[in-house]
Amino acid sequence: MLVHPSSIDLSSRTLRHLTRQLAAHRREIGTRWRRLPDRRQALLALAHLRCGDTYAQLAAGFEIGIATVYHYIREAAQAQTLAEAMTTVRTKAYVILDGTLLPIDRLAADTP
Image 1 (spheres, rainbow, N blue to C red):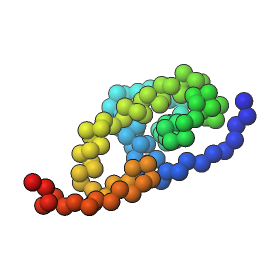
Image 2: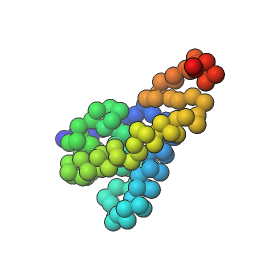
Image 3: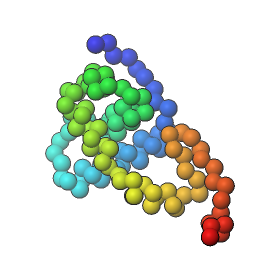
Image 4: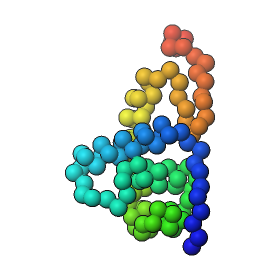
C-alpha cells in the first residue's frame, strides 16, 4: 500500500480537545504504554471520522496494526458522552460543529 500525506479540515483546537480527553481517560483507567501518543491517537480518530479513511489506510499511514486502529477509534469515540458535550455547549456563546458556524436566532427570554 502506498502512503501519502493528507490534510483534515479541522482546527488544532479540536485536536487539542480530543487529545486532552484521551489523556484524561488514559490516566483514569491507568493504562499501560501505547503504540501512539495521545495526540497521534486523536489525529487518527479525527482522520477516520472526518475523512472516512478505512482502518487499513489508517494502519498504513500511522504504521500500526488494523486491530490497533480499531481499538484506538473505539476508545476515542467513547471519550466524551453527548450529555457531557451538551453541558459544555450550554456555557458557550456559539457552537461550531464540523467547521460550520450555527447562528442562534433566539434568546432565552423568548422561550415560554
